[in-house]
Length: 244
Image (cartoon, rainbow, N blue to C red; front, side, top):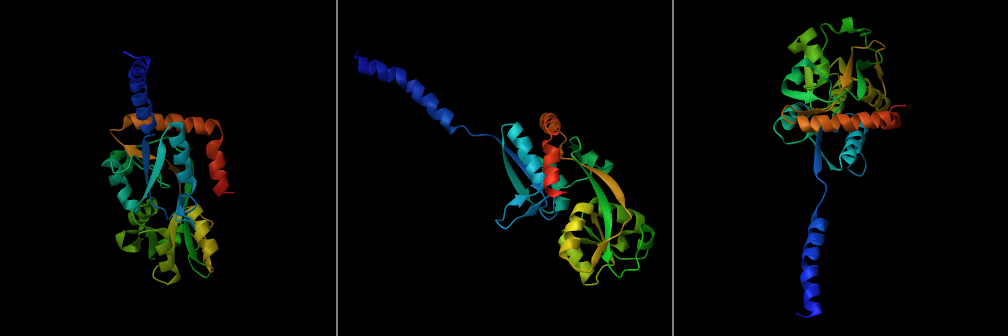
């Protein structure tokens, strides 16, 4: 056997190994969200989903050696999507509630949300008590939806696919107010003249990532990565970028 043939035999397995190595790619972490909830998630001018949740998910994915893929969908379909494996995790300014905890596991909290009330500047509504008898606009499936339906009745609530549609209904006089998280509320009021946020808070909540009940391995890894990011100051940096 010639030296050339011996070299070819030795190199062949190495070449196969190299090709296999080059063909490997990072696993994908698929995140579900509703990209109409600024500054937690929104679509930029390049049609890319950005915001607090998108950046936190990207930072966690990097910690886990994974690449991030984001799926935009209706908010009230997110729990089903993660429960059935259509997405791996949900980050959508989602509040931890007992009802949701029956369907999914939640990560450690990464942000605090405050539910507020948006009204026209000339509105007679001055406090939460004044919502009785009024038509309340909400984003379907959110805690604002749940709270208002429980407290004021189903007939008092008008549900919309996202906050922007609820605000449009408020401006058109179809609802008397909108109950939504404080941060998107500030964005909506800044972009729509003639609206204001009541000084009274409706509720204070914890935001966390939702993960399927059976996917305990991902939950543990997510929480470990999240704790590291908190310790490094990365979470505060991301939140501070969007909320001054």
